[in-house]
Image 1 (cartoon, helix red, strand yellow):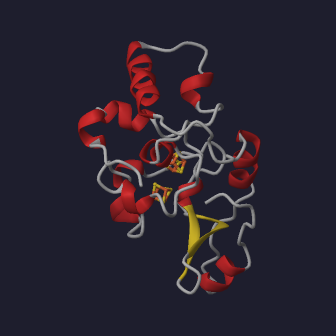
Image 2 (image 1 turned 90 degrees about the horizontal axis):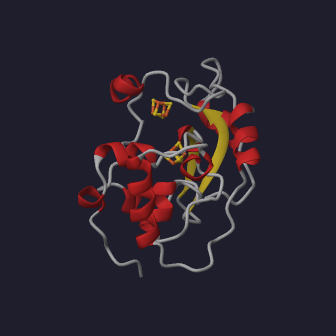
Image 3 (image 1 turned 90 degrees about the vertical axis):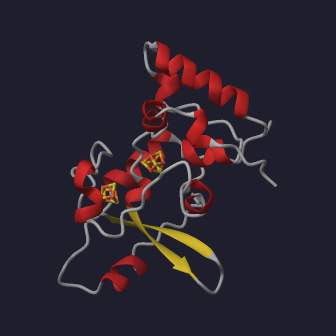
Length: 170
Ligand code: SF4
Ligand code: SF4
């Protein structure tokens, strides 16, 4: 069992934001299968997701505009991690696993002091020697860029069922 760490005390707000790699996968609709307990990822994207760059186009107003948008706070990770992709830094940190090698914190040409400090904190947290297999950056990009926006003229349930991604991302 993962030892509890106080993420809110450990990371500043700026550091917390830097942990997100903007993959956008948490902004794709998911199906919560009550029978199997599985979370299935779909290719249907939130209407506010910019599928090219992975940013939210209404970030400051996201909770007003999208009632189902989830706040990824340090206090919410213990529950949110069940539906977040395995490569997501928030989930990796909670589960004490290394971040994917392609995370922007590692691949940026230069790092500032904040990023260096953040990396040092992450390195101290990692306890798992062997990481679970993580999705590659190219696949993340392909899933996000091929995502579709919901069609308001069709029942959302059917659109989600028809767009389940079978790769074991979550
Ligand atoms: S899944 Fe994680 S890394 Fe990807 S956009 Fe969501 S919070 Fe950021
Ligand atoms: S509103 Fe929420 S779910 Fe939609 S794109 Fe923005 S952050 Fe993602």
